[in-house]
Image (cartoon, rainbow, N blue to C red; front, top):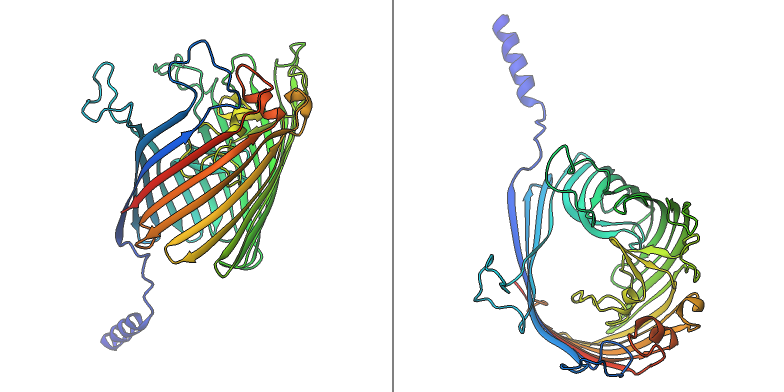
Length: 443
């Protein structure tokens, strides 16, 4: 009887379903993106006045190479590791690959490491830590690569919520000695976020978030800045997509007012963008509005604290999407404040692009943007910053792994652009012509 009972228990146990653990198969993806870039424009501003020292003339241009290696390691769909670095951007006229690192006065090839993070996604939980890109729901305030830790629950591509804590690099040197000047967080820039998404359907999703920035990098003038944002995103697959976002900032900077009191901060920004495709025709457009301050920088601050990134197809007015060169006009008219840009003039922009795919290997486009100040009093009474129009030609084969992208265009400046950009004559409005050619290979 005892033997029969043991056999019965063994048979029942064997017949029960076996719950296998998660797939722990290891996979590695290693990708390379190599870009050789030629850039030329007839001037760096809108003024043809010759400075006292003008040995090199006023045209600007370069030939450069940069390499993006990406490593993505996976353990099933549970653990992810991502590493991204950048070798370059190295100007052919400046860098010497025959020099070695560490040599005094060396101009060897440069290297920048950007992302190093690991992520766990298990039974709905999300844990991510390391150097990573942090973006708020609008992308207008927080859009940086920083060290951060994130914990959340849900589907990253669907409904989810994330709690994040990050630290931005600051300009206040603290040294390397533990317990004395390093590691006390007294002069650091700390970021806290609670954001997420609620996906109603495959077509519509609502993103929302609350953000807090504590910036103590300016000794004696710490800044506490809160922000709240919403983004409504809709999409119908490859045929169309649209989004509308709004974000407001509020807080104070201690001791920054003209009477050495606290400077109150209240700003806002809104952005709409969309894409529509039918056959070989694609229309892309974007609208932006960003609050402005007045001419007195010692009273309350109303200029938006900006990441430097926005939705636009322009090459000179906004950040160059192919490679951020740092010469975009929208950043040059703002005030660099630690890790952010304060757009005290405010901004209004309208962006529209028409793109055609007449052949499987060819895309042609015409993109135009107009950029205005919101408060002309901060730009010597000028409203127009500039109007840019450019023609794009993109040839691509081997499923986009070999690509030649050429751009040529002109930027027509206005009175506000002359006042905010020019170094000698702040009323000169000479147009800027530019061209850019990129040879891109992906491996």
